[in-house]
Length: 482
Image (cartoon, rainbow, N blue to C red; front, side):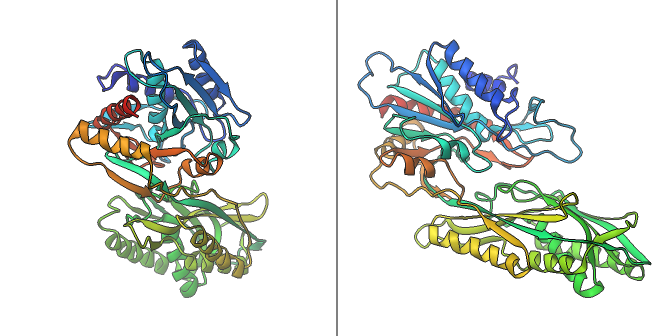
């Protein structure tokens, strides 16, 4: 990638270095070591806390020593998603990138720009000898994507700056000043193996090729959830044919709208052709329903060998009914601004034969804590009624807007100076580490900015190249004038 003339060159060269290092969430050891070496090789103070967060301090440039310290912050881990037909090992392989017009993409995997491009900008600032700034602290947190545990584990006092610029947003020209809080709810069904009856027909039902995306930022874009689509068809056939589950493997990460879902089902052999007809009719209906947002959906029905057992009828019926009933998507919008307030994402459904369990994972988000609790309870109640064991995590807090933010005022002013137009100041329905920082550092003045990304948390992730230079120029202007 470094051979391609991408601007700013220093940022994209750093991004290439970042993408050469495997950094799945919770397995960021190589990235931590790389950042330690990077800071020490520059002769800068470099600290790693007990959680694995890395902090690199850079002194002020001459004449700017009296300025307040600014923290630049991003997370080092990435969501590891790939297309099923792609051979890729996220623990060992480097991300393969290519340019497609104005977009930077990866070959069949997530790009890692969330938040590798933020890491790259911090590295470029630390290396630079021709920019003006006061004292800087570059903080790289670990494991943001699977629970913000890096920020959660950070102890007060690790960061000492007055201002914090989070580099984990996905829309250039927008300055984020608040975010939603979120949590995860898990449900577990315990099943027994039931003998497969004579004259049974088994088929694998697969839905794939959906757009997917971020379960917070994209939840209001009417993108189909593969898990919910599969559940709809299973429920139809439960009532019509007495369908029972043999296996189900659907969805991936808790913070991604699922793009693929698959189940092996059994019906009486006499219903074989009727099942195929209903599947095709269902596919046509869904394609019409999502004709704008989902243009690459695939619905596959493949006959398969009849196994000796299937999931017992009671568990299969209760699971399918609960999946049909549980809420997915936007629940409510904010009363004062055009932003999603509360939502839920049915993220994962997986059968584990070794433990005879079926695990369901959902994530709930809201900018209002009581509404988030209500959404989690609503999700939990459906599965409790169906006989599952349910557990809800503590979650992470939201970040409330500071109406007197000096950092926001400077960021707005400098954006107008650079680009001759006003930026959009808004909140985001995704979780940002700023929520946890606001609890640990109550007086910290924060904003979040970043270049334009699309398709994050999916193999369709892409970075709009021209916006990287715009964010870089804006960042340098803020550092100079704060």
